[in-house]
Amino acid sequence: MERIKPDSSSGKVYLIGAGPGDPGLLTIRGKELLAEAEVVVYDRLASQRLLPFASPRAERIYVGKRMGSHTVTQEDINRIIVEKALEGKCVARLKGGDPFMFGRGGEEAQILAEAGIYFEVVPGVTSGIAVPAYAGIPLTHRAHTASVAFITGHRKLDSKEADIDWEGLAKGVGTLVFLMGMKNLPNIAERLIKYGRSPDTPVAVIRWGTTPLQTSITGNLINIAEKVKEAGLGPPSIIVVGDVVALRDQANWFENLPLLGKRILVTRTREQASDLVRLLERRGAYCLECPTIEVHWPKDLKPLDQAINSLSTFDWVIFSSANAVRFFFERLFGLDFDLRALGNIRIAVVGAGTAKSISALHLNSDIMPDNFRAEGLIEAFSQIEISGKRILIPRAEKAREVLPGRLSELGADVTLVPTYVTLAPDLKPEVLEVLEQETIDVLTFTSSSTVKNFFQLLPDDLRNRILEQAKVACIGPITARTAEDFGLKVTVQPEKFTIPSLVSAIEDQFK
Image 1 (spheres, rainbow, N blue to C red):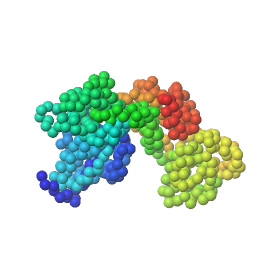
Image 2 (cartoon, rainbow, N blue to C red):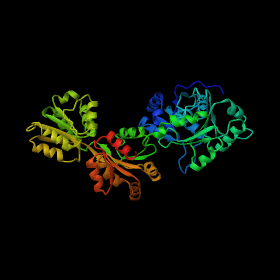
Image 3 (cartoon, helix red, strand yellow):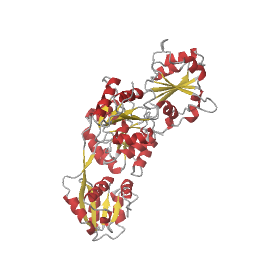
Image 4 (cartoon, rainbow, N blue to C red):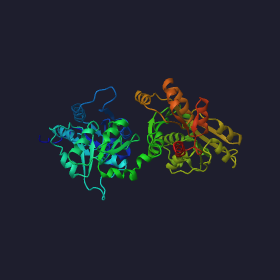
């Protein structure tokens, strides 16, 4: 059918390759268009970790298969993306791997062309290339082979399937990569041997490639089906056939990551979880996010506004958390002040994360103690003269009284300003569903609030099951003390109270 010229009044559709599973393999172009989209249509093989790149206002439509639910048909998917585009909306169709590599993206492009809808194809990293690379298998190698073929493995291998040249594949191509072929693995091996490939040819089967759940089984054509059956390996998996599989012993890097496959529950706020999750995932961990706190403005902003309007009367301002920095400066800028409002005020911070937040504003900390606690800051202030000095402390509505009390004892005039409040959020049903299904290896807490709310939010049976399975990791002694007050045994606690140190301490537990 001839393509209809796109109607300028309709919306547009971007067929975006989401990559094979590792969210870091999304292309820059794909990320840009996700941020622009008003509607995101995504399937099971598109990583959930990509959805935060979309606008919070974007409509999200899941078209994969959920447990106990029917699969959305391709016809339904076509209808959805056409209808949304005809409504004048910008649609991101997020597809696992590459849209045009066994992804039915070609069919969707045809439908859009026939409907006169503007579309763009954004290539993705196909699992056929990425998964073997993560398993340490180079698809081509100067000493082994110069050819590679990609084959869909889900078709019925009967005499009617004339589009697969088994003899040509068996004898004429060095490396064979089968996608969606797990059900047909015994038949694939049998066909290749029948048409001339040696039974001793190395084979690798890689499940959930490029993700923390990656598992690989190696063998040869004669025994790989039995090995996979014994291991209980199922889809989604990639099958690689060829001499290059033997190089895996030398080139395997991803499966040697120290936390590969460890399931770690992150209880930080959704906004603050990214650093911890990123560092854990770099070490191979599978992170489950269950935010147990939300951070909001206090109900009454008058005390904060008054403090900001009288900033010039203060000698020091102390920030004890990144949240305090974030909310204080957001309000300061919202009242049409800029950094000049701080004048000659000196700045003290508690913790490396807080210092990083200050640095991001192109400000320097005058005091940051090595001991990332209020007690360290008190020690630092006791070495200087602060009698009669006015000190402003923007902080959480409920916070420890150690710091302001001791500073007052040293003669300072301390003003406490509630700058933010921490609340327990409502846990989404899908979060509880995932927690019910998964085994947790490590439970992380980064503040006393995360501990308290963890006990408040989770049902007793689910919480107790997690605690029976998991090691408990706390960022510092105050958080650990709170956990112990709730009867928890803390097994991981870093010497430095920072996110990188917490991650390193978790890694040490599994060496």
